[in-house]
Length: 82
Image (cartoon, rainbow, N blue to C red):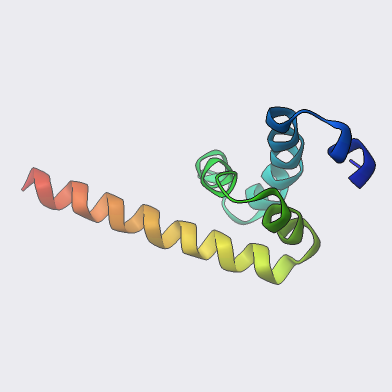
């Protein structure tokens, strides 16, 4: 994926192109939650997503933030069942 190809793509295709690059990186860290986390991150601005592709530290930070949110949602759901 080049910046030129990304710029020429329709908006919905841009997200897909970025997601296809993000998913394998996230899967290395979180194999079972990679799809969900990728989906969460794709809600971000394309510029921020490109930064995540370029910076492993930034990507790790966002993955950890997503895990925190997922854990909080799971805990709330468990508390409701009780």
